[in-house]
Image (cartoon, rainbow, N blue to C red; front, side, top):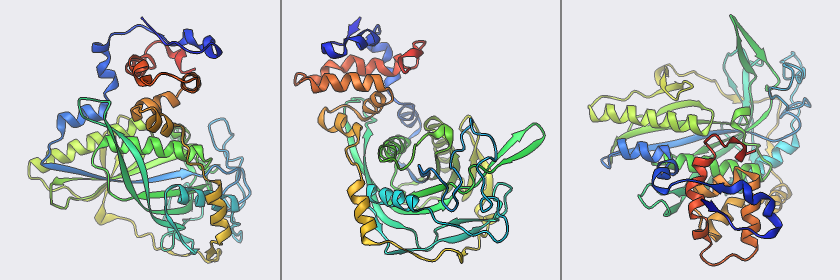
Length: 411
């Protein structure tokens, strides 16, 4: 039995964190699935290369180009937050939401990007039932920001899991765009809900700097928390606030591989399964001397990938400048306001950099508010220098405890 000693001020929580477990048997719960999969399938002769495109819904009360509410979760009645512009009534014009501009500038500062003096909107044409305009308003030629980077911590795949490292990933560009509606399958019917149509998105395009699934998972978790901490995006995968596409290529070291795009990765577990399966698929093909086709692959609920369309049949989106929105000038005072408002004191950084917790343990702490408060009070009370050792057994047991029958732990 292990009991965490805490100050009197939080003794009411102490009974919550009483554990019975064995170190040897629980080691497997602490090692991430991605680490296990890569140890099993990865060979130093072959190098996975991964790049990401993240679509983050901006946390704004109204949509990007209309005054309709941006609420669209399951508790909201379908098609009740739809303006005449959202439903593409002829003759209606877009009206730009200034708060979305501010939050996209916050994202640019957060990701250390160069902000453009002018940015421009474009029309991306394609035909789909949940896109009533027949085109998406996005930024292709002149995005709001580009050429940035984001530093994050990665859990080590070495046997000593207390070792971790910092990595920097390039950010190629950030573009502001509108979301589409949502297609819903109901029996034999395909229904359309336009509550989501027109909600503001920022698309964050990374450089292909990731070498394994573990790095991708750590990056997405920490970026999600940074965006949420600054009120840019709620970061709730289950609500569709954050969606991820991945470009994956596996080849022999020194050779250029074929890029395969995975669409709509809708959660950390889903992302892990899809990337692991796709890397394993491509690795097997490369080892057998087979040619990997450049294509777009969809992902089912179990994370299995299947071909959706080849690059040879890619859509011609026929981008043109958006005629109803003039180029937007980013005034120096707008950028200055964003730099003044940005919050860089992410809670997980304190646990990692100051108290030397491994990144995944720091993120696990922050997933439970009561546990975060408990540990923060304990740390603030002036703990001994070997504070990390005090949490060693808690660190090992936490992932197990939060996944077992003790479901009340996270509540």
